[in-house]
Image (cartoon, rainbow, N blue to C red):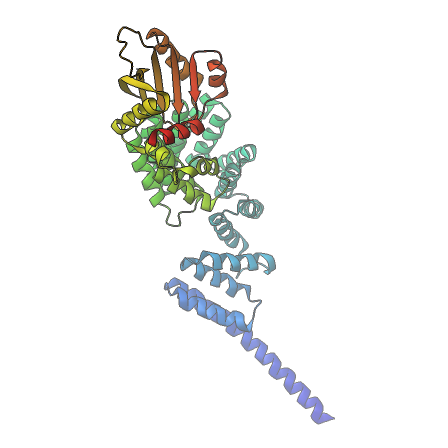
Length: 452
C-alpha cells in the first residue's frame, strides 16, 4: 500500500515538474518568435509559432505572433485567419494586449473591405481607450465609406474634441458639410485644416472635390495636384483630376491620369481602380476607340457585374464584334466617316451630297435627290442629314438646332442619325415636324444596305 502511495506521489511530482517546465519554456519560445520578428526572419518566426501551436493549440500569444509574421511577409489572408481565431477565443492579458491587437485587427479588416467588422473593432477600442483621437477618426472614416454620414460626423467631432488641431478630421468634416450643401461652413473647415497643417495633403483632396463641384476646374486641378503627395489619396486624386480634364474636354490629359491611377493598384481589384477603368472606358468611347473601351468594361464586369451601367454598355456594343459596318461607323477617322455617311445617303436614301461638313461628334450633309433625269430646269428638293456618333442619347436641344438649320437652308426635310438613342423629349419634339429620327437599330440596317 505504501509503495502504491509513493508511486502516485512520484507521478504527481513528475507531472507538476513537467507543467512548471512547460510553463517556463513556453514564454521563452514565444520570446523566440518575437526575436525572429525583430530580426526580420519572418519565416523562422512563423515556423517556431507553428511548432508551439502544434503542441498547445490554445496558446493564443503564439497565434498572435504567427499572425504578425504573416503580416510582415505580406500573407494578409493567413494573418486575418489567425486574428479572427484570437478574437473569437482568446482571453487578453499583459502578454496579449487587447488595445494593440484590436488596432491591428481593425486595420487588417479594412484591407479586406470588411467595414462592418472593422467599425465594430473601433467601437470596442473607443471604450477600451476613450482618449485616443485616432480611434474616433478611423471610426468616422469607415462610417463615411459606408455612407453613414451623420455617424461619421459624430466620430470626427469626438476626434476634434480630443485633438482640436487634427487637420484630417477638420478636412473630413468640411467635406461632409459640403455634401450636405453647407458650402460656406465646409470651406471654413477645409481652410482651417490647411492652415493647421499645409502638409496634410488629404485636405487638398476634399478642397478639390468642393472646387470641382463648384465648376472651378482650374482650382480643383491644382488642389488634386497637391493631394497626390498623400499616398493614401494619390489614386483618388488622379481619378478626380482626370474627371476635371474630362469635363474640360481635355481627354488626352485624362487618359494619362487614369492609366497612372490604374497602375498604382497592383492587385487591380479595388473599387477606386474600377472607377478609374470606368472613366478610362468613357474616354475611349468618346474618342471612338470602342474596342479599348470594351476591354475595360469587360475587366470591370469580371470583378463586379453590378458596377454602374457596365452591363448595359457591354450589351449595347455586343454586336460590334460581328457588325463591321457599325464598327467602322463608330471607329473610323473623320474623313472616312464623311465618306461612309455620303455612301449611306446615296445608296439607302437616294440622296446625293452637295456639301459635307465635320461637326462635333459627327458630320452634316446637305443633299439633293439623286436622279438620272436630264431635266436640268427642274428644281430638286434639298435635305439636311446630321450623323451623330456620341454615346450619349441625343437631347431635344440638338434636334431643335438641326431643324432650325434645315429651315434656314430651305430644306424640305431633315434626318438625324445616331449610333445611340434619342431622349423622350427629343422624340416628342420631332413628332409632326419635318425631321426623321433614325436610332441605332435602324442605322445599322441602313449601313448594311449601303455596304452591299
